Length: 338
Image (cartoon, rainbow, N blue to C red; front, top):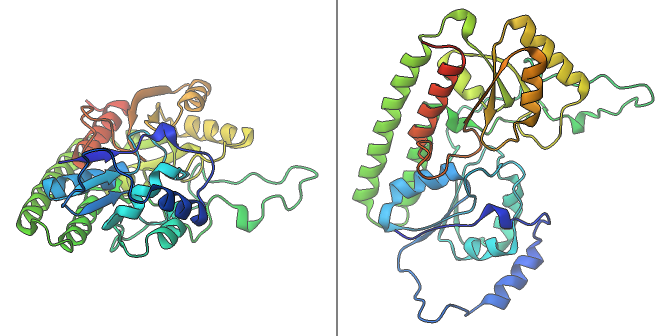
């Protein structure tokens, strides 16, 4: 199967306008490498590594797959570069993680490729909403001279903002696979094979789910509190009975750094709860988490968990079930599980 991944390190810091995309498409029309033949297989574009992994496993050799993001890319603030436009334009089917994760892509999809089928893989998921009352979600009080500096529209955690990290629960990941399967079946290619491969992946996720419940069920009540880089593990914690003890970046993404007051509050919470470990994530610089752990007298778990991205090929976390099992094992060990 031909699978193309657009390198993350080429991402521009300037968003594409619809006009720029159109200009690129006009300039590149009719151009191809010598001897290059267009694929007869349906062209599918997946946005994230999670979506790409599911599409790759279910679609198999029946599709020509392009994955927009590479492993390790922080998905929330990804920005399109000109080279991404061609993949969007030629796609027969576009698969999105959804739940607001790819808001940066919606306008581009509407303007550049209205003919493509676009499927949101979060359809049918019971999305959790941001909870400002949880540890690590507090906003600073206004400093003197900054009255009104925290406008309601500027809050990182509005009550209407969904948590997009739904794939970190195995039951939700299964719904994601089912949605991807149903979308891919609309292409009319290798329907029996796609159904069979989807069933196999769902079976692996069910097995992983049972193993995670057994593993984390071994942790005693006083060692079930998790502190992470950012608030991405809500679905995982809810599904497997763990407690959220706060996050270094008190939000669903890491687009803005926490204030000194928020860091101090988190350190106090960690000490008060007797939390002994702070977990790092693969797509977040661990420097700030390391400083928090040192200040709180906790251990930094430097074997990262995967939240916004799957792991690279060969990591053991490069599939949906592998990623979930990896995270569970790291958390189990980090919390002192036997």
